[in-house]
Image 1 (cartoon, helix red, strand yellow):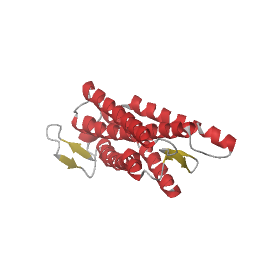
Image 2 (cartoon, one colour):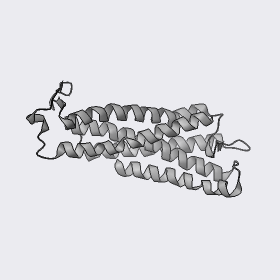
Image 3 (cartoon, one colour):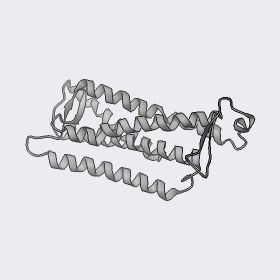
Image 4 (cartoon, one colour):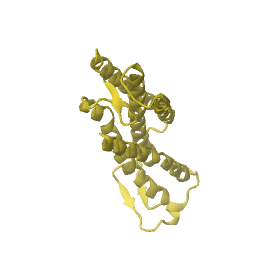
Amino acid sequence: MVLSLFTFDLIMAMGHVLDIRWINEGKIYVGGYCTAQGTLQQIGETGSALATLAIAVHTIIAVLWGKLSRNTLVAYIVVGSTWLFVILFVAIGVSLNTHGSEHYETPDGYWCWIGKNHKLEEYLGEYVWMWVAMFVSFAAYTPLFFWARGNMSVDPAYWWKIRFHKNATDEHTIDPDGKKRRAMGLIAYVPSPVYQYHRLLNKQLLI
């Protein structure tokens, strides 16, 4: 899942690199190059949001309840479904809405993006997933933080049995296998949805 996230981020970065042409020419216009940039950015940004969402959900289930941590089949299914959805959504959108003088990807601010005539595709193809990824990530990593500190414990047999501790006792602060310390490293994924949220606000301000 992490490799999938990095790949989507790389594709998104490739879309930004194409800005070099617009900077060099001093203008942005529709055409094959614009369509290519919009396609890359949509694949990268939508895929990154979905991958971030999948990592957040998988993390909270695997760390707190000890489920799915060794189930690679589920990981392959999630990653495969993510790529399939993103590629099909973008490909169908471009092919059905690009004909003659009508273009699906058009200039939008400083880059090319889904045209203003396709609001439904904008929201279903990216914005919805960015909002969901952001809220789910914070909802998942917040209890993970308190669990790692020893302020919260979860019954592995019954996921709904959650106990909160005002002060971490020795029982909760002891971390012999380093599991909690490693779990804290997963907080590093939080900047991804924050960055996506920042980009979402910037895009909506430009609309």
